[in-house]
Image (cartoon, rainbow, N blue to C red):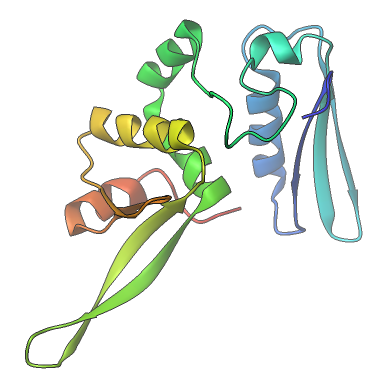
Length: 168
């Protein structure tokens, strides 16, 4: 994020409702001074908001690579996550996650298939934000490798399906 600007971009598959939703997320609760504009062309949609106080609102955005630096939610952000955990999970899975059909083999060699969510991010802090939010909602997860979080149990996948939805 540049100082004073925040952008969300997507392909032509974005619907007007998605753009409005992203614009609402960008502007937040008390950003009356911020202005946003949607631009489209050649099947692309970009929503941009410029405001000199973005670094105050999102202090985790700073100079340098995000993966090695400390990224933690401020108290006011934690309050919002506690009130709207589903929206945070939806955003995290849409940005750095996926939903797919996985397979495994039984001892007799037969394959079985199941739906799974996978999230991958190099930042321990961001992964911890994801897992603590999953814990808040009682959604079971596991860590199959250092930089990944998996949600594979049927009841956990069903819970995420209710609010994560397809990527837009």
